[in-house]
Structure formats: structure tokens, C-alpha cells
Length: 261
Image (cartoon, rainbow, N blue to C red; front, side, top):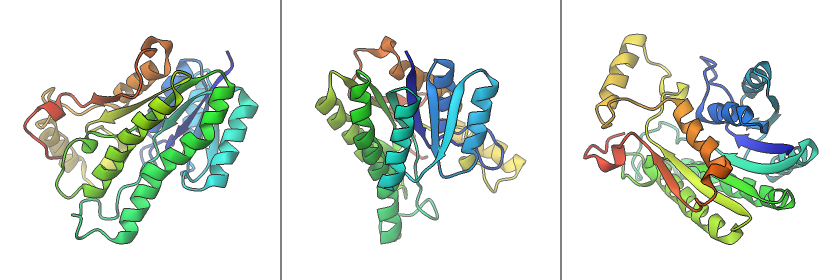
């Protein structure tokens, strides 16, 4: 089957060129036999594509803004040209400026922007991909959420709200489009990715990871490949009876008594 997957937020890390969560998922789905459309605003989406091609996969990069309808329609049209669109992975996300702000401190602009990207972008891509997925005979949608959807993390309100809304969106899509399209979300805990590492010295970074790992019963943070493995499973027929679920991948954090992020 000439199957195509769209992965938003699929660029490599801008500084280290290491895989982001979206980049790792794109790479894994390429190994699984999908033709990949990497969607991002960062030009390092091309680096994800290059990595996939060097390892025998097929991929293209489409620079697109997940909040702009015309960009989304262009990406979906490209998917139809490549083959049968059977998988959408919504991973593009936005943090508020200044990251940790309480709900009295955050600006209205930041509130609107985070929800526009994190929730609106997921909705819009699903809206315009669903008709093509149905034309292909069905498939899967995977929304990348967060443990922040379930935990009330101090000074992280708007991000938590956006991710909780993604889980609700996931359930609604799952009910509306079953049995043709299965829709699930993945809720990672802390993952070792570049955007968590900026502006830290190697010594501070090592200490920070060690302190963060103490919050997790497994004693470490996740690697991007561990999130990609779950996405691979949800995109496959091996998960054919899983629908409308939010799969927590957090080393036991949400069942522990430490709720700092």
C-alpha cells in the first residue's frame, strides 16, 4: 500500500540537529513504510527528510504554519499526490513567551497564541486531513498531548489547558469518525529534547537532568525514540482496537506524588 503520513512539528532541533519528538516520529514511521510529509516552520525540517532518505525512506518537507488554512490545504493536496494519506500526527506546539507564568501574569496574546497553535492547529489539520484519510479507506490520527493535560503544574496553566483540550478533541474525533479512523493521543512526561536544553551549560544541564529524573519512578527522563515507538504502535494494525485513548508515557510520573515539571 502506498501509504502517506503527515507529521507536524517534524523538524530537527535547530541547534543540535537532534530529533525532536515530531522528528523522531517521522523517522520511525518512515521505517514502518510510510511516505512522510514533514511539516514545520523551521528549515531543519529538511534535515529530518535528509535523514529519512539516507536511511532508505521516502520523505518531503513542506514549510507550513499549522494555524493557516491555506498552508494546511496545500500540505493535504501534496499528500494526495504522493499516495494514500492514512496517518496524521499532530505534534507542532507552542509554549508561552517566558514559559513559566501564572494565569494572572500571562498576556492575553500569549493565551490566544498557545491555544491557536496547540489546539486550533490540531483541529484544522484533522479537519482537512479526514476527507483524504476516508478516501484512502481509513487510517489513524495521533495527537501529541502531555502529562500537563492531567497535572496542575505550577505556572504552566495555558499549556496545560491546551493539552487537556487536545485530549478532549481526541475523544470527540474518535467517536465521530469510528470505525474508519482511529484517533488517540500520547501524553509524554519530560523528554530529552533540544528546546528543554537551550541556554544551559553542560554542567547545569547534567545537574538539571539529574534533579528532574528524581521526579520519575523510573529514575530518568524519556528519550524521543520511546515516544516514537508508541506512535508507531498506534499507527499500526497492532493497535486496531485502541480508539479515543490518551496513552501516558511518563515513567510513572502521574501516579507518583511529585507533580513539579
